[in-house]
View 1 (cartoon, rainbow, N blue to C red):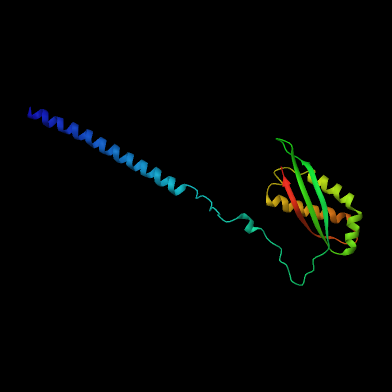
View 2 (tube, rainbow, N blue to C red):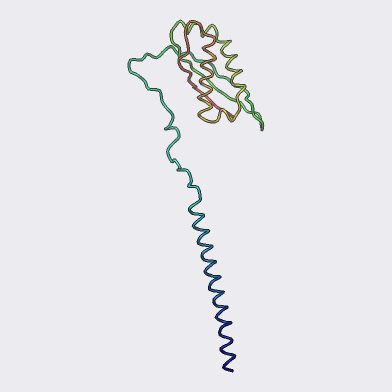
Length: 166
């Protein structure tokens, strides 16, 4: 009987050894997985809790700089390109000009300018007009388009006095 107890001990100790080694390997694998996950994961981009309107550049107003004559362009309602449904833009503009002489020319060419603005707006997509960059690009395109008609002066700036996209 004494021999049976001695023979049984090495078998039990071997089982315990396998269990301990298995648990140790499992702990090492789990620890390595967690460490790898934490070290290799991408850090989330810093969230800006600031108002995005604060980052919009505002033109510097120089005290000595004169504001040119302004001409209001009446409200437009234009269908725009959209894949999912009918969308439109409702907008009013004011243009700042370089001289009074230019104001007269703008008033004479108003039908041509309105036509060009309607065509330009009608070729925009809903997605293009949703963000600030799209609106800035539209302003630049409008300025260039209107300036292409004018001969006695130029448009200094285009201002949206009303702009709704639906």
